[in-house]
Amino acid sequence: MSNHLLARLGLIALALTLSACDKASNAEEQAPLASVRIETIEATPLSISSELSGRIAAPRIAEVRARVAGVVLQRSFREGSDVKKGDVLFRIDPAPFKADLDSAEAVLRKAEANAFQARLQEQRYAQLIEGNAISGQDYDSARASTRQTAADVAASKAAVERAKLNLGYATVTAPISGRIGRALVTEGALVGQNETTPLALIQQLNPIHADLTQSTRELNDLRRAFRSGQLQQVGQGQAKATLILDDGSLYPLPGKLLFSDITVDPGTGQIILRSEFPNPDLDLLPGSFVRVRLEQAVIARGISVPQRAIQRDSAGIAHVLVLDAEQRVGQQTVELGAVQNDRWIVTGGLKPGDRIVIEGLQHARPGDKVQIDNTPLPLAQASGQ
Image 1 (tube, rainbow, N blue to C red):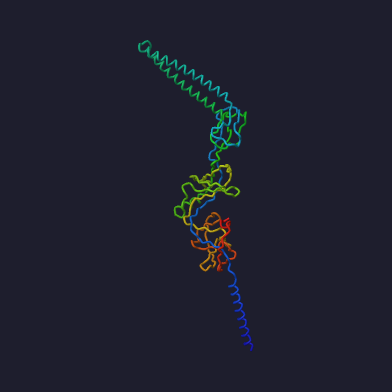
Image 2 (image 1 turned 90 degrees about the horizontal axis):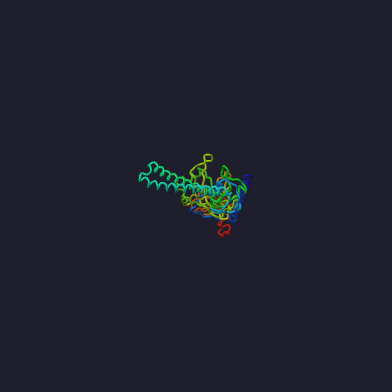
């Protein structure tokens, strides 16, 4: 009797369990599917950028120095202003140099008079020697005197030119066009005494250079990728450059890469890359620390995904959620490269045609079936902002 009762109780329990499973299955089937947005992977040309740090440098720097000794009488520029080549900057007392020029010109006139007299004497002796009225030695002496006085005239002319140069150096002009800094001397200062005294500094600011550093390891990786055909090189020395200011904002005017140095710094193992940027408003000043994004290579058929589509596990391994033909969620491990315009460049794990989840990741779980939301995105989201 007890066995019969136990059997009946077991059947009742089994029936209740099956009923509960049916209800749970029905509830699962009736639950709405999670809604996600997807992106279909496409292979497109992608540029490989390197973000390098460096400093702004003026392309041309001229140290204005005193080339003659004297007292500064006048400063003819406004500090911090733009000057053009040939503009007068300082005036040094010209009186001593004017006196030197007058003296040199007087010596020249005397030398020319002596040369004139020597020529006349040579001409007279030339007539007398024909009649044997003078000795050959006297005639030779007259000819030598003519040549000596001609040399004295040439030396005196050189002295006059030197005196004119020194008088011209008393007026200090700008050797290049650019922006001049503060004056390093004031009126009344004695300059050029036993040394070339610096007077001011002129720097060309438009266009301006950004000198960057890149490790030889990164450069060698790029070269190997070029040789293997994985990457294509950007045009000869004209790689596009984007400058990032110290506050993280982008400089509005694009630049270009000029050249890479051929010498490696033995202390750091880095080389110098020089880029050039327009600077019409003089926003970029020499010495400023900046970062520059250089597009140094191109992937002919590259794959990229939005940054928000990347998930990482506890070990830091990156993966994305993919959809199969039945719209079930799967998890795919990916290898990531650099970031470009809010998108990760994927170097492995995905292929063209794969569908990845880019929104609704928090509601999608591997193995779940989801529905695709095809409603248009707002303009700001569609543009990646």
